[in-house]
Image 1 (tube, helix red, strand yellow):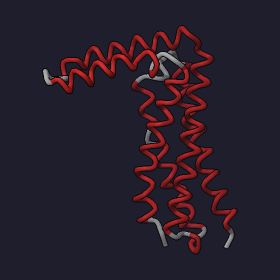
Image 2 (image 1 turned 45 degrees about the horizontal axis):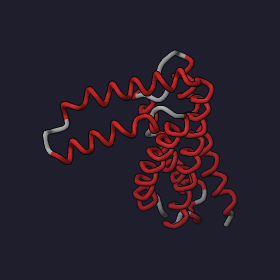
Image 3 (image 1 turned 90 degrees about the vertical axis):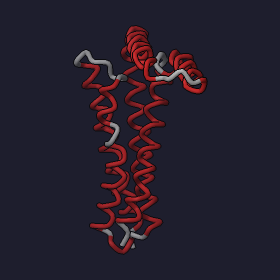
Length: 172
């Protein structure tokens, strides 16, 4: 039983997936797109894919170690590492882009929220949700920490949600 080889598999997959996420953010920035806007969400499924791929690789190459617990751990390691690296990449792009890029992102996010106002009904709860969303925009979309935090949370949550079924189906 070589547990280090199993953990190295998860780390390798997590680092590669994290680098893909960083490359996507840098590519969007380099081409003049908003690296924090809706196009960034095209890469959100890399994180859960990294978790499942790590589990699949463990099952394929280290079948004796592919228990439910190890599979879950490998998925969590790969997803966590991918989410952290992606958030670091988003934060770095935000810092390099500076205040001008963050103001542009805030303006685009405000425009999206304003455009979705019609979708909110006349119910009190929907109005409150709309107002809360609009109040949170300057922090969530206007700062480097805010966009990195949002990126980390979304990718980690989605990755962890899809890692559990992967661990169940890919155990030995």
